Amino acid sequence: PKEERASWKEKFVSLRAVILPIMIIIMVLGSIYSGVCTATEAAALGCLGAFISAAVYRKLTWTLVKEACHRTANLTAMIIWILIGAYCFTSVYTGTGAHELMEKILLSIPGGKYAILITIQAVFFVLGCILDPAGIIMICTPVFIPVIKSLGFDPLWFGVLFIMNMEMGYLTPPFGFNLFYMKAIAPPGVTMSDIYRSIVPFVALQALGLAIVIIFPEIALWFPRVVLSR
Image 1 (spheres, helix red, strand yellow):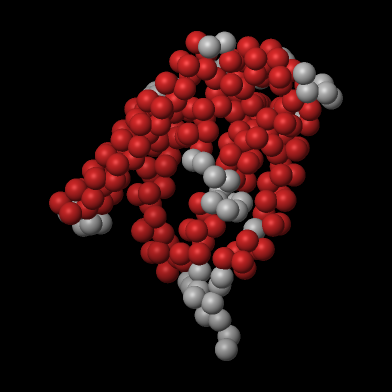
Image 2: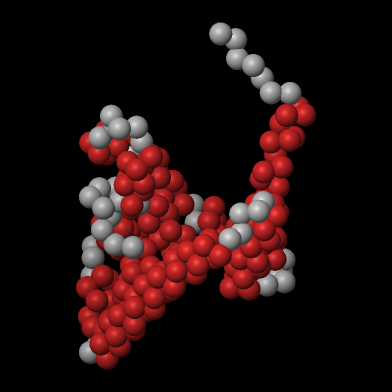
């Protein structure tokens, strides 16, 4: 049968449901990029906007508030324990002089500084398959950042490469979180094997994007420099 297209009036009416969420996004990002707020303060603004949005749509209940507070407390506690463990690791790592040994090992890799960079990216990729990005940041920052600086690479660019790598980690077995998210919403007939096979082109495209940003760093650095120069 011929598909019925919605009229412009119906389209505008349907947009009412997303007006407030869009305004929250604009408010949060706009306050950060304009320099009005720090990222933490903008997050608080976003939280306030979410409360107002829930109240406008009559979804703000004590049950919802308690559930949100409970989830926030769980997430905050998890991050704090990661920070405690990472701080202990960093103290022992630097106190024993292991960072100097690691720097010598990495700098001895044949092939120049880009071979070292690719090795680090390979380590990130493997860790991203089994660990949460927050944990990887806390563990790997004291290990790799001194090496990256000594090689003359931009730490901001290295951070962009890290984020891109973590996105690939979220899509790769055995513990890629996005794989299990997809399984949860997929039809019953879709198996994990089907999902594993389906992510190959997506991971390949992300790997290609990572390679392009490694070859052309300005792709990742142009916009941050424009924003930070204000």
